[in-house]
Image 1 (cartoon, one colour):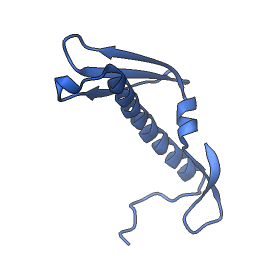
Image 2 (cartoon, one colour):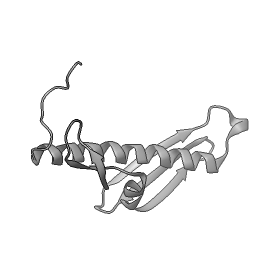
Image 3 (cartoon, helix red, strand yellow):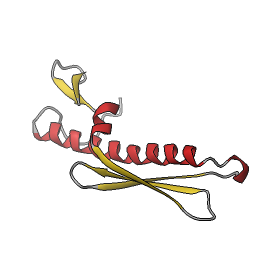
Image 4 (cartoon, rainbow, N blue to C red):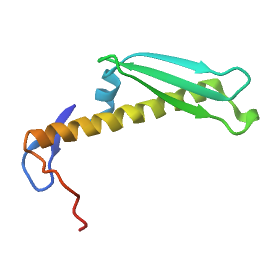
Length: 107
């Protein structure tokens, strides 16, 4: 995580979830393309042992490219990693008293 971001209106450093940080969490990846389909699944294993998957499917059989499917499935799995890391970061900032809980402003 990068510490260069600032909270809105405050001069407090807040870690940022960079692509490099998210990539550093991945220790293993595996792919599966189901036979007779254009569906590709990527399973990422994180440093803490948690496993997340992403999938990709191609609508047009003439355009199916297994490498593109793998890239898209991995990208979708990383989106799931990011969502969980965003929640975890928000919780840590809340517990540290840097951010307040409750509902967001409608401003």
